[in-house]
Each structure stands twice: as C-alpha cells, then as structure tokens.
Image 1: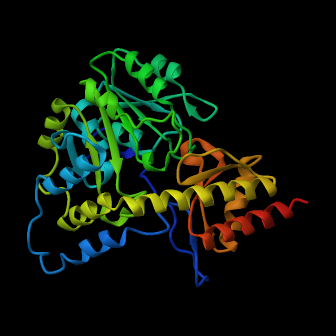
Image 2: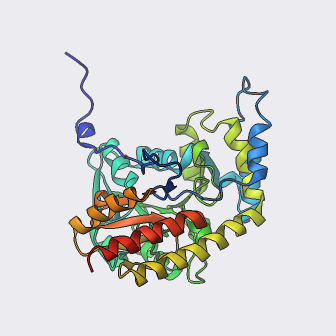
Image 3: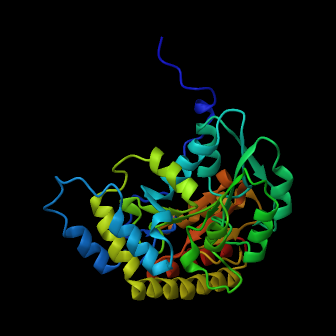
Length: 362
C-alpha cells in the first residue's frame, strides 16, 4: 500500500497562479498576477547578474546585509526581521509554528488563498470571517475568534478586493484579541498605498508580543521570480521563525537583488506613480464601458459583472484580444475579474477589450 498523507491534505485545492501564456499572439498583456510591469530596478538586475561567478557558494544564512538594508530604509530593528523565500514561506512557517490539529485560523473571507491552505496543511481549521462591502470587518472577525483560535490573518491592503483597514481599525482588532492569539498583518501591497489613514502594522509590532507584519519583494520591487519576502515581529516570534526556517532559505542572488532593490527608492516611487496613473485611468475607462470597477489602493482593479456567466464570458473575450486577467471564483467572487496594472500598452489593450465586450450587449 502507498503511504497516506495526513487527514485533510488531499482536501486542499492547490494554489494556481495567474495564466502567463496565450497561443496565437506575438504580444500578450499579462495582467493576471499583480506583477510590476516596469520590472525590477536596473540596480537590482545588475546585482543579480554580478553573482554569476559565485553560484557554487552558499548564501549568507542570516541574510545580514539584506535585513540591514530593509531596516535602514524602513527605520526598523534588523534583529526583528526574518527573510524567507517569498512571504508565502513565512506565512506557512507561522502557521506551522502556532497552529495545528484542533486549532483554528481566522481570516477575512476574500483574503489571500494561502491562509486557508497553510492552515489546512498544518491540520488546523480555517475559519473565514464575513466581510462588509468587500472589506475586512473587525467585528465579524472578532465574532469568529474562540477558544480554539490561535491566529488571525488580515491582508492589508487586501488582494483581490483592493480595500484596506485604516490604522484605527487595526488597533481595534488587536485590542479585541486574546494575548495568546497571533495577529498576522500581510502588507504585501503596502508600498502602493497613498492614503494617509493607512498603516502597515509596524507600530503594533513594536509594542505587542503577538503581532507580525509580512512583506514581499514580488510586487513593487518586481522580483517575483526570485521568491523573496520578509517578516517583522517581536523577538519571541522571530526566534521561532529562525528555528523553523531552512538554514539557507534565501538564495544569494535573491539577497543581492533585494538589497539593491530596497535601496533604490527613486525606482520604487516611479513604480508607484506609474501604478496610480494607469490604475485610475483604467477604472475610468471601465466606467465609460459600463462595467463596475471597484476602488483599489493596490496594483490591480477588481471588475464586477452582472452575473457569473457574464464574468466568464468577459475572460474569454479578453483572451480573444490578447489580454490575460484573473477570475476570482476561487476567492468567493465568481462575478468578478481582477486586472493587474500593466504597461501603457497593456492597459490600452485591456480597456479596448473591455469596451468591445460591453458593445456586444448593446
């Protein structure tokens, strides 16, 4: 007989990323994965390339230079930073460390799919808290917290809805949690937010023993291929993560590129400005086409159609026009599509496809 996995493992629906290829087109607008359309900082690319003669060397297991660079840029304590192979790895490690069989992990209903996947993988029960107007609802989250709750995940801002909880609501959420419950604030899209009411969670981390903030280099820094992320937490949680992670969990190439990327603040600002211009432009074009485009502070726009079938037809029409977008049925939003913000060419292709789709109905 073949070995059997632990109960619940085979019930997990594997995470499937956005499509990246489309046959029959010389150019495809890849707007399904929330990537930075400008690519990485040229300085990061140069640092990556400079390591080609050192591929036989092990990386720094402590990611010292990278943690120091992150700490300096964000005014943080480097000793409280842990780096990982994407924030996905850190999320999984946190769940492994603090939740298991008989425990519960609470997350917002339309939050990142890796939260319930990581919980189920660890043998814990994932509990989805209802949202209000596609926004995490502090009261509903707290209603889901019980004696078995060990962790609460909040993506802030949230993918795919593009909404966020202001700093005061994060404070209220934390205040309502028992001391033994770990609050994980996933701030993967923090760099894109320009609303003064937003806070990434670092202030909570610095004064509480049960709050962790996670970040990624896959979005604003354009390093998705290298799998690089980091977490900022209290000393007790950082100690646990360092015990669980692999000794060389971040490659030397990722570390080098990450150091250069985080230091290139001009490039980050360029990416933010590009995103703002084309996100707002695309929302306007969607409105002209008669399609609801929800407000977003991220590098994507959520389109809502009048019915699941209409959303599915829109995906097919986008593909017919060389544009790849993402259906949101797996996030509990079957009538929605998420469109990442791409280059000017990408966004004009997407807007033209949306306009011609809308004309089919007239």
